[in-house]
Image (cartoon, rainbow, N blue to C red):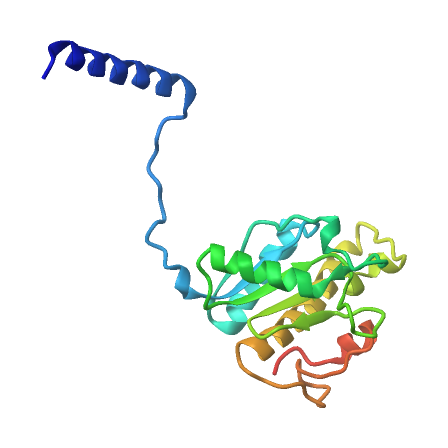
Length: 214
């Protein structure tokens, strides 16, 4: 081999090393690579606007109730393309499709996907003013908008925040567990008010009366 070519290659490698060291962070050990994504049967994809503490409490309770790992992903962004035409409500059909796409990208095709949003939702042809949730086989969309008393003029004080947090957690768990009932366990809607699968739920008072388990 031409000695000048060898010297040129060595020089290029040396220059590249200097440039890389100056421009890029040092490589580090990547941990937790052995975790099997298939171990998570339930995946919650939250949209922006839901506090981390609220999501963590839901995750821990769901893992305790269902004896399985629950993955809560990073936030899904929001955009006007998600809105229903002529309504200030988010299109549950659109959010469900996004949820399935995200589930595939993160390798959770066999998990049940729940898109959890703080926004008011509806279906394009529902004929209803709103829906609490919408279910599509492998994915559900659940809204917190109508279970948050702050959206109806309640202004919490410092002392009442824990009680409001607990009440919203209980309501959210009922909606999520109903979605899991449909999508994971194959249950149908129930006429038993003591079952979390009870329907129809016509308002927050109904939701508060519904049982918390199957």
